Length: 451
Image (tube, rainbow, N blue to C red; front, side, top):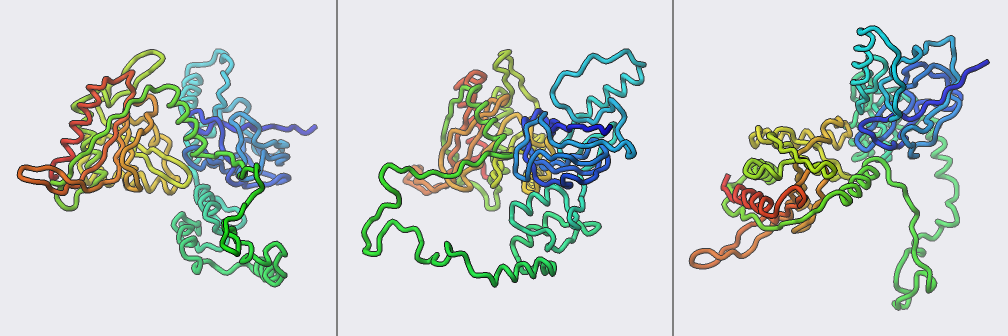
């Protein structure tokens, strides 16, 4: 009698409640071996390759690319093939579903130590654990094309056919740069396969659908041919869009913001930093980081974590700054570690590295948590002041608005000075207004220095 096994979506890191299917590497009816790539999943932080937990025939898959699967729910079902390699009964896969484990039977000390070591390994985004061996994320050949899961996700997002991209990576793998180059310059794409070309040719020769026959005459306009306003919908009818479920980073961002709103008592102070004395070549973000470090060292209460349930506060000796990075997929906050030990060049190199890893979706989850204070430089787009959101356990966030010139009174007259609008939001349960004001004062004074 054949044996079937359901494989539930494991926790892909730090208690994430769900993940989105990016691409299946198999289809129902295929035979897959133990630890071969099964599916790539997009979490709030990265694209993760999930290996098969068994060897056998794929009976059922949880959904199609783009579908959301809840952690602990069925991801795939298999008919186990006893003739192929299987994982030993009870062998730790490194994935955790959040359910409490039964009490272990008495075992020798060596076995207990090994089990403790495996339990401590956990699951790292980009590296899946099977027993004690870590399988690093690697390029997988699907449909004759080698590419890493993050590269496939980017190609899907940009609408690039991987089969037509010139591969420049090791062993003929398509890289992230290859995909972006193809999206930016379609002329670099390889010719389509003969079958696809014939299909495309046949499609192009077919008559266009009737609905698209007169696109020019169907343009939406609020004016009639006579130039008078006209209705675009009957009275009482409201325009409705198609509901779209939030996925990946945006889905996690929504949860984090809602949690922060329910747990923090925010208060915001705003002021301007006069940077008229700056020497040419100053890096705004690096100067903001330096100013935050100086302010944190002067007012340690703002460089802290706060536990609202236990009413405890943790002051930090190091300054780890979360740098908000805006992307089409949502907001990332990578951490610039030990900012208090970096010079201007080190700050810029660190920020560039983090931004590149965010863009490539190759950033490790450890780089997206544990910051002691955060910075949002939203002024690079627009806006003057803001009320940025403090995400627990942090107690403060600095936001820099768009620089502007303003008339400034000076001895004997007025001058035009360049200023940066600053907003500091802090959790008023953990910090006093005086502490926040002194923090802002130190930040402003440091930014006023010539270099």
